[in-house]
Amino acid sequence: MSELQDSLVELIRRASAEIPSDVNDAIIQSLENEKKGTIAESALKIIERNIELAKRKSQPICQDTGSIIFYIECPVGYDQITFEETARKAVTLATKKGYLRQNSVDSISGKNDGTNVGPGAPIVHFHQHRSPELKVSLMLKGGGCENVGAQYSLPHEKLKAGRDLDGCRKVILDAVLQAQGKGCGPGILGVCIGGDRATGYEYSKQQFLRRIPDRNKMPELDELEQDILKTANELGIGPMGFGGKTTLLGVKICAANRLPASYFVSISYMCWAFRRQGFVLNGESAIERWLY
Amino acid sequence: MIHLTYPFTKDQVLALKVGDEVAISGIIFTGRDAVHKYLHDGGELPPGVNLKEGIIYHCGPVVLKDEQGNWKVTAAGPTTSIREEPYQGDVIKKFNLRGVIGKGGMGDRTSAACKEFGCVYLHSVGGAAQVLAECVKKVRNVYLLEEFGSPEAIWELEVENFPAFVTMDAHGNSLHKEVLSISSEQLAKHI
Ligand code: SF4
Image (cartoon, rainbow over all chains, first blue to last red; front, side, top):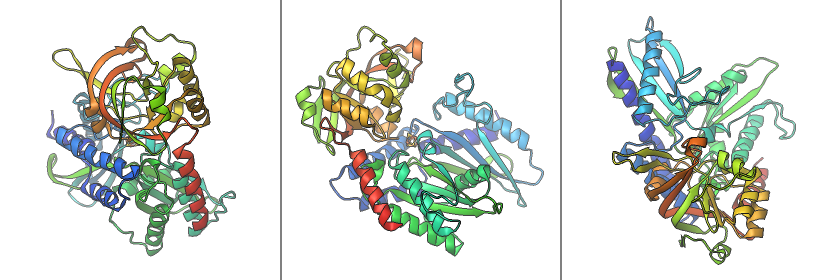
């Protein structure tokens, strides 16, 4: 077994069992803000205890260990084929060890072979950079929250949403309303304005690589992020949709160029069990530092 | 916090209202998509499964066998309930269920059956796989394992102080409907 494979198995274990500190901080903050004695507060307390227990027992935070999505930044000339093969082996092994549930189903036959490996699983995105570093990030994204994601095409007549930032705001807030508590809120939104139907969702998910306190460098988008976060938390949906003050923990928005004829707003919802981790490798295979 | 202990009587259930926090102890049975479709389509309950005055839990637990050959639940969070909406009302009526545990809430047909037959919907915390697994003290039995596979089988679990929240009561009230209407009104003010 290669050292890279070992490192990837450890990455999966950590991602599955340990909530990143920025998410943990946001959950604790929301618990403090919530009205005492409400069921929203009780739900957040259970969430807090669950996070602590999963870490201590080194067990999955949530049993739906989700879609396994790798993002790799690699030096020019890096052997991507070998990496992908190693990643598939690491996923199979991590599943055997119980860090991942047997969670991948053949869409035609309905069979689950128990390995979590198959066409399109795991998902691996490569991106080259002019640095000798190998940076690997991993996100585990559950099904309940994926199901409440939405893509709007503007203009949207029913919501009176035009092709501008105000229109974007309307459809994003509509997505929050439609999701209610069904995505295991309090959640985090990743949004892409523009792109095509595929890249829109793709970039919306990549927004989850940003830390929760991170602010957008584009002033217009920063303003929109803050506004949506504030407004969503005034809707009273609350944790699990029980009513309450925290509906969202964060909002992350990016923009991509679009065709003159299209204007998509793609929204991904991440549940409170926000599992992401990553590392930078020193040389080819040993972990130099953790990213989150 | 209201303690509910198996068997769950009609009086106990009628006394519950939306917003109550409960701790469930005793026997509960898991059942999700395959089980609901099977029961709805006229399938017989396997001998040993008694849903009368019982609770069904929408959950596909992760269950492992230890060295002594005993089943052990390692993760036991709820799955999305609304998928059982076409079947639930019927199952409540046919088997005299007193409670359904799940997440995300259910629709009008289930709500009507809860009112008519004295049943409640109990929302457990989605994603809280570890906390909820700790409440499972014992796996008493498993049914239809061969037929449906592990997550879809009926697991008979003994739980202690399993936390859940009444979000649909036996009087026709639904927290989900309430929150949807309040949040829709709020949103209209902000747009
Ligand atoms: S939405 Fe997230 S927390 Fe809820 S069940 Fe799915 S993975 Fe778990």
